[in-house]
Image (cartoon, rainbow, N blue to C red; front, side):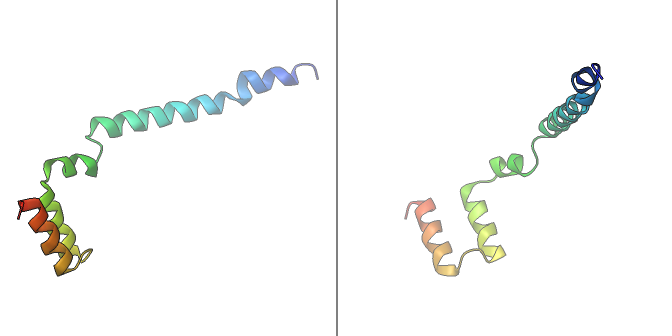
Length: 74
């Protein structure tokens, strides 16, 4: 009975270390691959992003034209 406390700190919490190790490995692999979509967004100009938002229907024509004019300095 006196050895039950040692199990928690010796083997019972060992799964936490494995979970943390897996999380670190997944994070490292993801970071080495460029981080996904955020890398693509850096390469796009603001005007290209605006055009895509308009094409997806996120903004209407008036909003598109207003923002395009602001970006072009009109």
